Image (cartoon, rainbow over all chains, first blue to last red; front, side, top):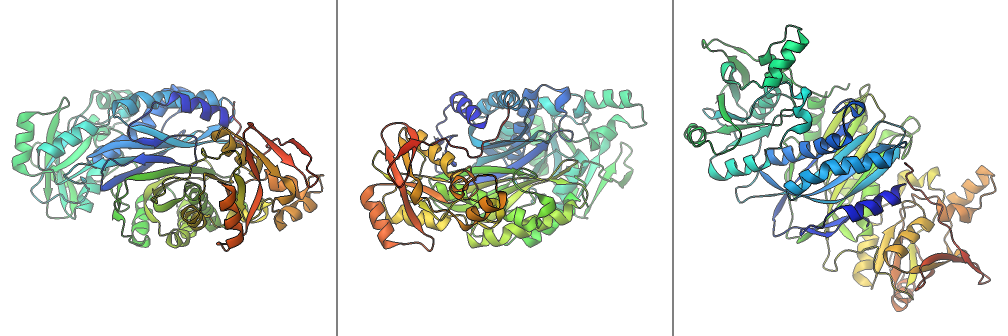
Length: 308
Length: 308
């Protein structure tokens, strides 16, 4: 029952210096620690679209739901502060499921010093739905927006791409610390995290920045999982196709002025690889350029929610 | 499609002085206007539990989803600042539905000077789910908590109770302005909004305050809808039963010291009625007392999400 679960939650959730009032009241109260602005993001995940509850440990689902939200804060170069968690649980086995979801979230919350401030725990006759909202604070350098890329900026990415459905979709590390470090040490004009696919999210970034982008396909870091998935599917798709379009890589795509990009790559300041995969250009549009220099339009084939 | 809908939303949503960055980026940025603390609340609503989409204009569903969240801010005596809206839409007709949901929210957002800062718009093969998160700010008097009622305090309620399923569940006015005014002008020790039912939410308030409560049943303001519903159902339930247990009244239940309660009722500072319906007592528990003074235990029969 809801009240028993809330009693469990109040015991289980750790205290947090920013949390003045946690779960159990009509709302939570969060100390803002002198922040003048806060960052606010929500991501809702549903069974059969964002995960397959029947095929995966529910703790991994809880972890993923929190991690995709943390990735959005990373994309803004924002420090996590607090989360509220709304659940629509199936009635049968709902309590055990809710406990596992929270147990999946808690280690990640602790790692990023995030307060779980409260939530709303519902039951219904439908599949599992999780909606997590995060509040973050900005550093003195302000938000890292999608708008801001300038022609001539390099496209710099973290990590590698493709095939996240095989494993990474549940296990990725949101690039929170990486984004904060890069934003602090280098000039970064714009940024986005790759949830819908490298091609699609690069397209979003370029559009918001009112410019275009040329992706050097031979430079794109292709993950082992993309190789495996292409081989496994045997449907004619290449590892590069998967790297460009699969989505849920939750890596960063950054617009960096050439001198800073060069310095960034030389200094190698992160545990994860940084790669220069092309440049932003004045002409709106998206192109791919191969190793021979041949340039053709790049059509984004990443994820978009379809409804009419 | 998702991107077309977001383009519509960015045009449709009004600008707001607190909104530094609205929909269309990885997260929203909110100016905190000098607030040291913020209030954070989320409510998730699902089709067939919180509304029946097939039987009601979708604008009323959108309005309700926002109003129940505003009612939580009211219960904290908090001023609304910003909202993020997460939707899981059915694929067929999803765009028109999303537009109607927002059109239902927007007049209420405007009325309470609330910025709709962003959201997450998804589609799936399941029924409609809405999850709205609100950020509010506190007045100098701090939050109105559930904990804080003291033995001897009067139980003061706004409005009337019961039968909200007939209409009020969609049309209620969240008691935001009422809570702020009462919290400012009078000593109020604790408060809650009635979402689960007067008996159940009074029980929540008493438990959090580590005291008990005696409800004077002859004083409980019974709504016309409760009378109508009892007559319509003809199942032996009385209008009082509906007033005590129906839920979704979204009225305030307040713990007020006797002198302030007397002053409050004499001054009648709100457009809506205020009624003294009993007192908090030292002994934990919940009782009902009738016009003859007979006192019996009151078992809360309000709403609770059931899952095992």
